[in-house]
Image: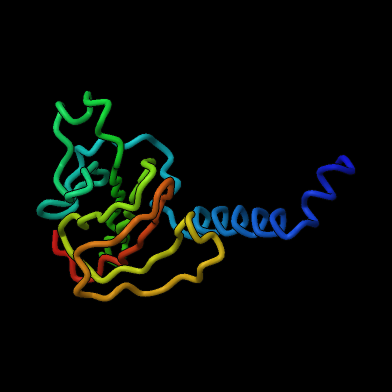
Length: 156
C-alpha cells in the first residue's frame, strides 16, 4: 500500500468510503439474490406479476422497448427476486436517479413491507424500515437507493 493510499484511508472521507464499501460487500454476501451464478433475463415467474428480474420506470411501470431506446429516459428501477427453500421471495429493488434533481419514484407492485438498506446520497445512513403503506420514495440527485422486502406471504 502506498503512503498516499494509506493517508487517504485515514482521512474522514476515506474511512466513510471504506465503511461504505465494506457494507456493500456484506450485503452481497448476505443475500443470495445479489450473487446469482448465472445471468437472469426475467423469464422465470415466481408469482403473479413477479419475475426473477424486472425493469421499471420511475412511475413503477414495466419499461417499454421505446423507453429503453429513449436517451432522455435515465431513471431506472431494477428488481431482483428469488424463491427460497422456506418459500419466502425476497425482493431487492434498486432505484437509480442519475439526473441532477431529486425524483419521486413509485414502487412497483407487488407492494410488500420493505427495508431501506442503502442510499448513496447518505452513505452512512443506517438501515430502516419503510412505512408499510409507502408506495413512493424520493431518490436524491445522482443517487441510488436499495430496498429489501423479505417477500413473506407471496404465493406462487
